[in-house]
Image (tube, rainbow, N blue to C red; front, side, top):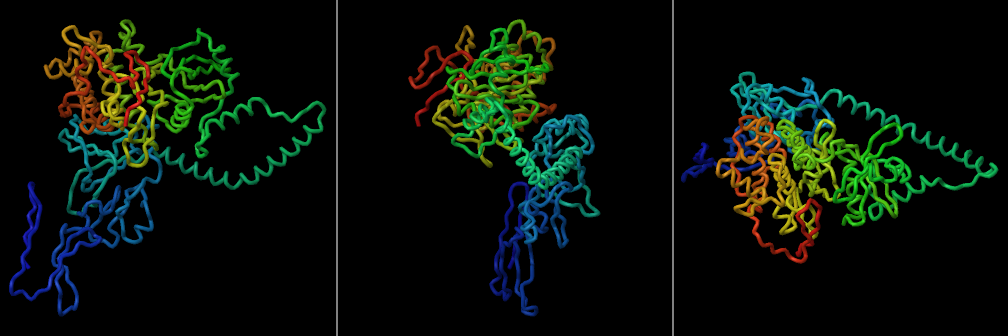
Length: 596
């Protein structure tokens, strides 16, 4: 048999032909190793000999050791896990099936770590992974490290010493151990903080202790409860009534788990009387504002703790399902750019959420106000854009649940005392299971001007729907103008159309609000406009995901893709709105029943 193998930058293939008078018996196979092999029959050995294999080395087979696995050639155990990782399935590895790869021994705790230390990284010198990566131009290796540290989606980075920083997100495949004579670049992998791992180990020990003592404690509590109950019955003037607070809490939990017994409420319940005292009976003096959900009040608990009290309005269009959705969802999320839920209250008459107090209210109160907008210089606005991007990237890619917000807008971005942004209002959010990134619905909900075209027209929503909303928010932050109700004298254009016209005329800097022109970094402004226009492209497949958006925003001197024409560029003077759609130009949440 004659075999020809061609492998170059344009093509990779092989051909073979059999000699007419050949007496050699040959066969081609692909076995569990992932290699294509040619074997010939040996009469002397009465067996098959391996004549040729492609790829030549076992470690060159893509994904042979799976994610975060290191392959070593010419050994009995070719695959091992990175330090801090372990096989996903020991049983499969014992059967020499390494394709399942490795998983971290402890949670990365990325979003909770604010200080970059050496013990957060693992430095390896080996053949670089074949997983998809992004190149960023930087000045030195410390900038490359900072870029990866600032993005929770970043798994590893490497620097070539010439200004190119390569960023990997997600899993790492085809890591190969070097032989003694080979050299390659050093790759730095996020390992997680030693402190976080120590806490995890302590938590495991604590759980083991609790499992051992809980039965004894239950018996002791039951005994004390029985004695207490007997004494109360014999005491004069003492009844067996359950306190009003416990009764109310029990009823609240029944309402929250109705039709879904598997739901667990991870935040504390507050009785209505406590909330009435904290807000001075919902007085107008304590009213912070009015949202799509209902009015929001400031409250003060005994001890001076300030809270924001969100009270469901009967006219809001949001009912018990949205309320339960927000409580159960946000209770499971922890990120510095997401608002923190402190508790809830629910009964037959009231549905109330208690949040951490944000003294600077929402982003729209600043950027759309002629006076307050001057308090946000370009650096603050850039930090706000980056914070929103990181919060969304966490929801889409880094949290234990994949969450689509569906109502991202400037009114749902709250600002703390240091002007740090926090995404709020998860009443319309949806969880998508497993590896799915979207779904569809017959009930279109959201805010006019921020919803993507595929969602408005066809009821299709995905993480790319949130990306579209993010793009609109970025353009509003830069321009200080609302997307809805934006008109030019010569044409009826919305903000997206105006930004696009300036972009193709190479006048994008004119989109910037006048108060920012002195303080802004023009290259950062142009970069943010470019990213925003990528996010609002009409075809959802053309929009980047939020992990890539974060990398684009923090990277310096990156060559960004050119955006295509945005959706909803032109708004005509006449409007044809079907009777089944309920739409208004003010900033309120709407519901559209879409025909299917």
